Image 1 (cartoon, rainbow, N blue to C red):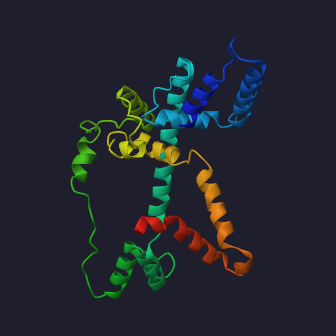
Image 2 (cartoon, one colour):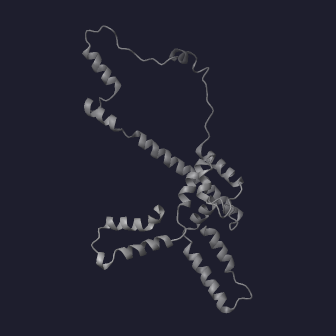
Image 3 (cartoon, one colour):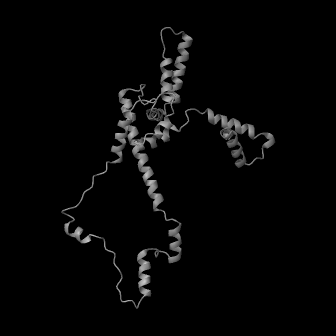
Length: 249
């Protein structure tokens, strides 16, 4: 919402021949202030606007800049997908509580099936039966005909290609009415999982600092001179109750 509003104000503050010297100077001051204030976050604002289905047409950008922004969407969605997969792999790679208990019982490096089987076989010395060997079913056929009749499954498209296809489908859809909630709209786009994850990261950013300033004002009302010995955790709880109590009424 910031980028469309900024473009609207910049268009409104353009000088015209009917402006008085004072009005012209005020418009130049406003325009210069906008240029300095949002120079470092322009890419962030354009990306957030492109992910907002209400403003995805980005009419305030040139065709070249719009294509660059949507290209960055596919790249960002790919990076987020790779980060989530790496994080999921790290979580799966950590041993659970049962594995740790097995290590404690069997000793380091002995919590595997082969070592347990060898211990059982050593204990049963009077058993003449050789240890069972697990063979994969069809191993002989694979060894004999595997190179000639190898079944090749369909190759899965890369994440970058999937992200690019999602961007194309997203741009083809009708824009969302201005009164609707973009986050609720993204929850229903089940065929755009990569862009949905990217949209949640950008559209959750508050567009204004008024709410944060009000939290500081509330903290100033709670932590007064008469209540200066309140612990910080109690202050956090009181601020939370003050700001969320109306949700329970």
